[in-house]
Image 1 (cartoon, rainbow, N blue to C red):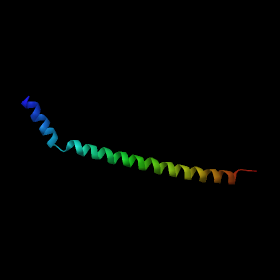
Image 2 (cartoon, rainbow, N blue to C red):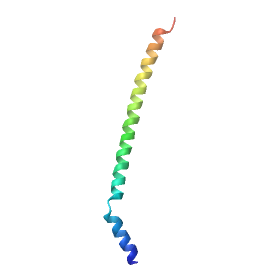
Image 3 (cartoon, rainbow, N blue to C red):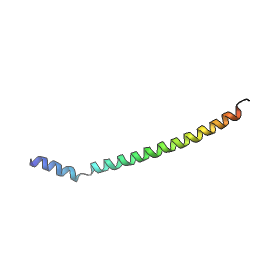
Image 4 (cartoon, helix red, strand yellow):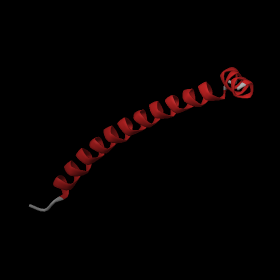
Length: 59
């Protein structure tokens, strides 16, 4: 019993868990920003390619 209590106290004193959670949250935010940027760039490039394609398309 005393050994398990000591293990729990040591776990709570360590900072590995909160640090890992902070990194996971930062990674999630970076992924969301990257997906938003890729979506915006994809939409803009699709519009550009469509206008160029229609401009060079023979009538």
